Image (tube, rainbow, N blue to C red; front, top):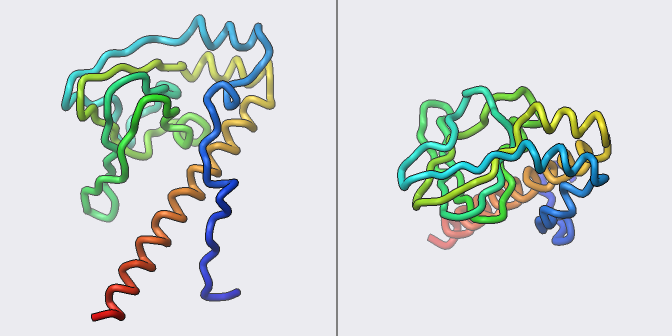
Length: 161
């Protein structure tokens, strides 16, 4: 299998509903709900910046967002964010530093689940952390699949010329 890229399995490629990701006992759910903060953003406003300390998980409620990153001296547009997405799992579950910058493309809103509340929820109900880690793995798999398909299409176009 050396030299061959794996194609992501469709079953592992779909996003799970937020209610399933944050499924936990009522007392844990209450901790998260009571600590959630509603945030409003104007067009062009930065939600968070790459390498800054992460404040928690963001649930995009309304609007459209751009994920941007500086990698190897280049500015890149990674993808867009839309309502219903839970963003920055990598930072919240990892080293607590944002891995990209999120900017509002339109007026929008989000809910912030602060890190302190998340850590309390993880202590009360450890499977919650595992649910979120599984979703992070699916995100990485989706990104890998997208990059692989992009590279393959470029290669096919180059061969066709």
